[in-house]
Length: 252
Ligand SMILES: [Zn+2]
Image (cartoon, rainbow, N blue to C red; front, top):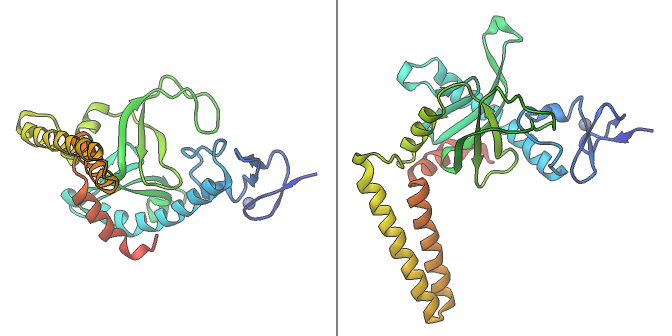
């Protein structure tokens, strides 16, 4: 007796089903393939998260093919920066992507059947990692190197380990530079200034809290949190502005 796929309704047997964290099952044949199985953890996701991820890939693939792919044929300085086979960065659009190339119809060249596009400003982590397991629960290969990417304010796939044999330090440095958090001497002034701003904002929040004025406390608290954020993660305002323009027409 089979179960039904919670997305398409098809009847699925034990082999053909992927069980989700909330007890729902989806079919491996059609619905799971709409997601990026290599990166998205279906085992620990519930149905709503899976649906968010499928929507993300549907939108991301379109955006990637609209915005990133044409730039790959541009002059070298205008091409997306690429890390390994699947991470692409377009700083002038405030976007980055995880995309899987396919050579199936090689006469047309490479094409990208699946991609997730992220706002660069949402990127929080890009450190090397050593995962024990792959998203499907099988053991990860300890001889391979990975980068952990995580994004805030992102539905669907927002936290994943990316196999990367390149120089992780160089990769981190390039992202640090994009975010203005490069800690070289030339940049110290900026870093220092945002740390002072953060300290001032925290003091302001503490004063507001002491005064007992609730709305002022909330406002000052938010200010302090933002200033701290800038001190740690760099100022993402300009990147967010660019991403908002690039994604405007997609109605996400
Ligand atoms: Zn299905």
